[in-house]
Length: 418
Image (cartoon, rainbow, N blue to C red):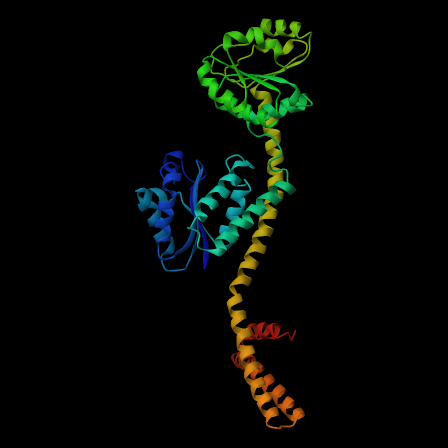
């Protein structure tokens, strides 16, 4: 049995190709049934995200195996093989195990160390396991990869630092305010970045969130999800004083929050500090706001420097994580090889027990016929010894006759002679 990983990702293929090789949740069962119908495939897991489509397989070795699987993938999606082949990667056994561990740990992601991929891998495994897995080695490989990803998260700092603008903005807020559960946050805009910020803040149990947007309807769905209040952009001036933290990301060509607006808010707050994080380009907050006492303004460039510093920390942690993956891959492959010997061990043990049972039966019969007990035992031990060492002796003699020192040493080691 051979373990394989076959796929494309953001490193090897543009999105125009990746989107044509994806497997939708609605068709996953059908795809797996088609995949498992291939004569060489014993079990399979399909991982399909916006950045990668990968097939993890347990297969029987056969001639032209790679060509057959690539042909299946292309036929299933109606693609030309020549268009796809240069973007595909192929990993086998040790490399396949290592690749899955790296994927699950976030070491192969577009954003190094991102945590979402582990959940995606677990879901792919769970979806594929519903009547489609059919291979214990493949199941063991995935379970091992989950534990390795957990170990990487626990023993390294791979996911500890913010490497997205949204996460960096929330990290900055947590550094300045001791507890976000005591603050009010005003979010300006309702696009993708603000959505991510709102979800991060909800996880940290912010006391009160207000979402200000040009159209209330667009902000309502996000507000319902995170438990926020919705206001229009014209209401920012009268509500700004209530906000301890303002995070803004709109597509407005002109600033939305001016110096005078912040001055009035600070006066109403009796100069209690305000944190303003402007992650819009062009800027939503007038730069002069940063000159006001008790108004702490951070822009995109400030966040980028935080992100670059944190990315360097993640890359250092990734070196440690790669060491963990290499160690765990070696241990898993050793376990796998030991399992492959189980059938041989059982056969050898059964053969020895058959010889023992045969000679024991003859010895008991001799005793029942009045034979001398000591003589019967001596005969039993002599015959048992001869029968058990017969095959190893022949192998030793053959290796010696052939001058095969390597095989001779292996035999000596297996017989406990060294």
